[in-house]
Image 1 (cartoon, rainbow, N blue to C red):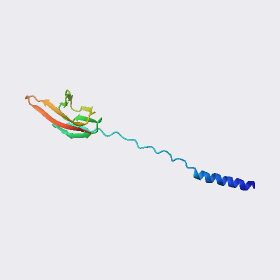
Image 2: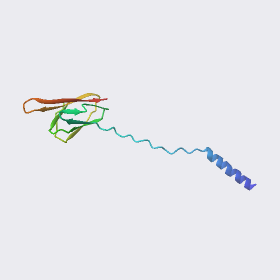
Image 3: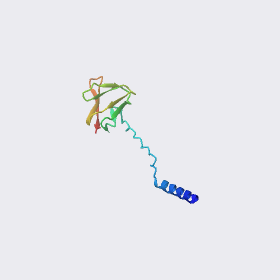
Image 4: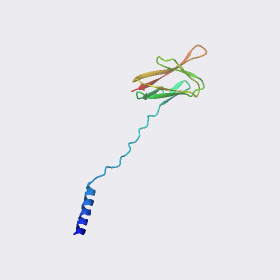
Length: 121
């Protein structure tokens, strides 16, 4: 009788063990990578690309790939001089269209001017 009771106890334990579910192992959520920072290249008197779109709080980098320095202006800010090979990173905190420009005075008194746009959503 003890042997039968022992077998019934084991069978009951195995049956109950099958009913108890262990929670699945936690699946790590994929880490979100920060969006790439767009780069605007200054080359031969042009911006490439001239228009970039970013989310509010995002940044844009300007890189002077030209053979001369340029002065980069943003609305209501003093100009920043970028020598060849230098870059500038700017973060945009407000939604809207933000224009920027290079305005360089030339020796003959004229201006070299080209503009671009950052669309912030």
